[in-house]
Structures are given as C-alpha cells and as structure tokens.
Image 1 (tube, rainbow, N blue to C red):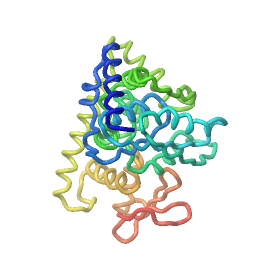
Image 2: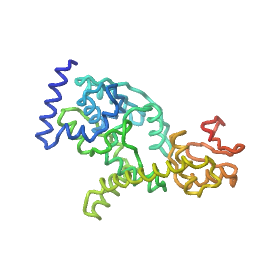
Image 3: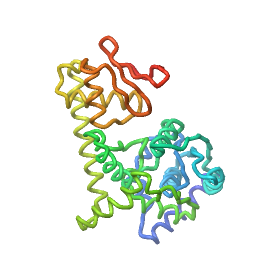
Image 4: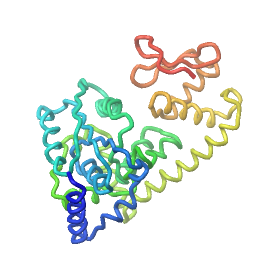
Length: 312
C-alpha cells in the first residue's frame, strides 16, 4: 500500500469519525502506541471491535502492523475466523499470523484459554480498554487479590488503549467500515468476567447513578502507584522474607512470582507461600498443578512432573 493511499484512507477515516462526533487525533492522543516507536506493532487480534479497532488505530498512527490471531478451537466454526479477519484488514496493509491451540474442556476453562493465548502472544499488544480494566479490578477483588491485583493492567506498550472506551473502538471500526466479530462466548454466564460485565457493573452504575468505569480505572491507577512505591522501598531492604512484616513479604513474593511465572495469586496463596519460605510449611500447591517447596534457604516452583519452573 502506497504512502499516498494510506494518507487518503486516513483522511477519509478522520472525516467519517468527525461526522460521528469523534476525533481520530484525540483517540491517538489517549493511546500509548507511540511507545512502540517506528518499529512494527504486533497486536493480538480476536476479530472483536477492541482488537480490530487497535489495529486500525496503529495503522492510522503510521505504524506497520502485524496481527496475531489465536484460535482456541472452542467453537466448531472458529477455524474460519482467521480468514475473515485477514480479509477485513488486508485493505489497510495489515498482515495476520494465525495460530491454533487446543484447550481441553473442563474446569477453569476461561483462565486456561487465557494462559494458552498469552503464551503465544508473548509481548504483543493487546486491545484491553478502560472497560476491561474496570472488569479486571472487580474480578480481582472477588478472588481476594491484594494491592497489585487491584492495580490490574499496566498502561504502556502491552496495553496501549487502556484510556479508551469499548464504545470508541466499536465506533472506530464502524467509521472505517471494517467487519467485526461478536464472540458469543462473551455472553456465556459460566465465565466470571462476563457476569461482572453484564450484571455487576450495570448494578454498580445504577446504585451510584453514574458511570463507574472511570472510577474503577482510577482505583487501578492509584493502586499501581502505591504498589510501585512499596516495591521501591522494598528494593532498599535485605532480600530475605523472615524479618519483613507479612504484608510486605507477600508483596515481594507477588512481584517475584508475577515476573517469573506470569501468575497473579490471591492473598491466601501468597500467605501460604510466605509460610513455606520462612519454614512454617513444607510445601504448598498453587494453580495449574504448580507446587512450591522450600529448598535450603530458597523457594523452588515445580510442575506436576517435577520440572523446575522458578527458583527464588
């Protein structure tokens, strides 16, 4: 696609958004896409309005875009979605890499599918919006998360549109005339996030008589600020856990485990792991059949086959 054609298409998109009461420049100003620099942007694309909107926004920002589509195989027709996404994005010069993972039926399906998807996406940008941030705050509170969990997702390269609303990404797709896919699983009440979106957030908005999404997003930002300050203080203290107050020891463990395994654990799990670390318990099993044991003066995380995943 020539630079002139890109320019013409962007101007058309700007004009169409303006007729709908929106501004492309303002949407870009609230994104963190510039943090990717001039290099290509890899974006996880499901076909929904958020991910298609993020791809369009990166294209409008003058960046080379490569979409990564993960098919979980959870629906009989899911293998056709990649082709439809590729066809919709091709006129904008956006390529698509299609990947397939097999997620077995069973308990905790939502989280297992998410973990499989993240393993493939790696450092790709994801199209989480302010609405997703609010849902994550509530979902994490419900599972007993501490300060870091309430902080939810960090804005930046990985989550470049956390200051945009879900309604804005849909509007962007409509203005560009781009096909979008509304995943029927987003309405499945088996999944906690879906019920938070469909039931809890509307109820909270009704109780307060206002939009609660910006309030929850602000709560996440405040929690991130506190967590970063605590981490900065902890970095100046000895690395052991024995002499730390339990709340600070759990904070340190949470940071190390999140960085090393990509897991966000609730306060109960972190307390059990702290007790293993200081010798009050021999071991503790956490999610995904991972067990943590005290070995000498450190902690070792192993899978069900005994493979070492992390050592602290």
